[in-house]
Structures are given as structure tokens and as C-alpha cells.
Length: 173
Image (cartoon, rainbow, N blue to C red; front, top):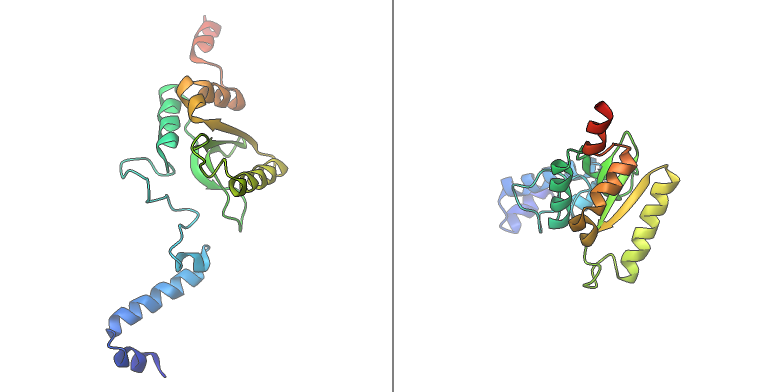
């Protein structure tokens, strides 16, 4: 049965059917393919589930936002958020500095049986970190406690090989 006949037989608006068809064709051409049709988050899109509208692009959680603001406050480059580092895979770094090949993974929910502490999540994280290491990335997994204490920012500073502001001023004198 032709699409227009089917649409009329089912009482569907012809334009709505054409719009849905156009979306399906666009999804087939996109890098994310059919995932877009299935309602799953595309690899380059921020999560709408827990994302505040005023957060910068690439920030998907409260912990990532805390890290972002602490990096800004420390005067460090904030890097790129949600970067896909393996073509054809859905793996993304929470925050990374592409030129330096340094990445930071925020491990949320470690005390609440979150995704990073369950068997399948640990398996997925191991695969992601192993692929990243094989591709030459230095990855810093950080927890909420590390972000809040300032350890995460200091580790990122060391990995990026940027001297702290107090040392830099002492060297100038």
C-alpha cells in the first residue's frame, strides 16, 4: 500500500507522515544513525535528563559542573566536554584537552550503587579506559571528594604541566 494511502486509511495527517519520514531519512544519514530514531541520546548531544539549561555545552551533571567551575576559578583551561575519542564508538570523555591527550572522567554515584560501581558499569569503564590508553590518552578518573577537596584540579594541572599561579609568580621575580 502506498504511504499516502496508508496514511489516509489510518487517519494520519499526510504532512505529519512526511515530517516523520523526513526525520527518519535524516537520522539514517546522521553519524548516530538509527539511535536517533530510537530516542537515545546522540553522542554529541548533552543529556537533557539532569542538565540545567544554563550549564555550558559539554557539562552533563552537577559534578561535571563543579569541576568546570573549579577549573575556571583556578585559571586552568576548561578543555572540551563530552568528546568522542573513538570514531564509530559512543565512548566520550567527560572533560578532555585534545592537544595534550589528557582526559578526566568524573565518577559519580560511587557510594550509591551508581553506574560506575555496578558490574556492567565497571566492565564498560574498563573497556573505555583501556581503549583510551591504547590510543595514547592519559585519563584521570576523579570522584566527588577529589573535586571538592581540590585534588582533581591539582591532578589536571600536573597532567597539563601547568605551574600553579603562586609558583609562576615566584619564577617571574
